[in-house]
Length: 209
Ligand code: 0O2
Image (cartoon, rainbow, N blue to C red; front, side, top):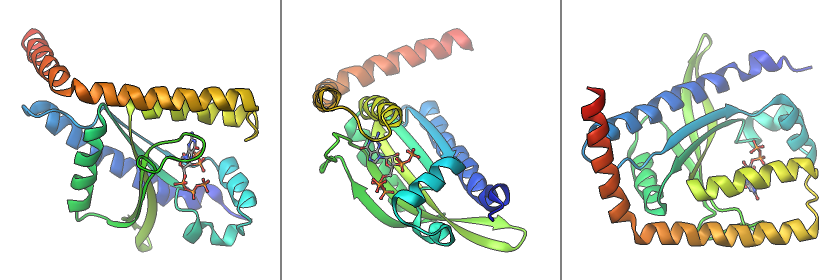
């Protein structure tokens, strides 16, 4: 049987390295006069129980997960405005420290559940004692509103083992629509909000220096 701890070490390393890199980008933006397109960055290695569950669900033998389960390592970049997502996509496409294998736009084509997010599958090289190892990483880019919705829906899905009752499903659809409208409204006043945030962060810098 698998030694999961050993198997997952390079995945942990990829997640930690990428978190540092994207947090570094966030910090550089914060120190510049430009709007910061990254609100926060999180990352995780899929828990072993979820890996086994997903493999069963997809009829995937465990010997195939390294190749076929491309979200063992996951990074999430959350931003304030939908426009920030495009800034991040452009910047990811220009990077040379990984390759983009796939892009899935669940923003223009939301899932039936109401889920919206932009997904990229990256091939990221990690140095191991046995040499370079290419690791697949699923990068999810979404707004705060999309993230709020997805987090709630994810826990309900867990609670109901994927069988969310119809009335709650309908409420979730309406909540997804509300999150979409919230993103639209915020985009309309984006310039105003960004100006206010610039003033606030300058004042904050003066106080803390
Ligand atoms: P976790 O780690 O618990 O988040 P599939 O499982 O077939 O739908 P696939 O082909 O692996 O997905 O890739 P896809 O569609 O890009 O989705 C992978 C991940 O996106 C999921 O991981 C979720 O994190 C997120 N996601 C996709 N659809 C939904 C949705 O309807 N609601 C929510 N809340 N999240 C979604 P996992 O496997 O669920 O694992």
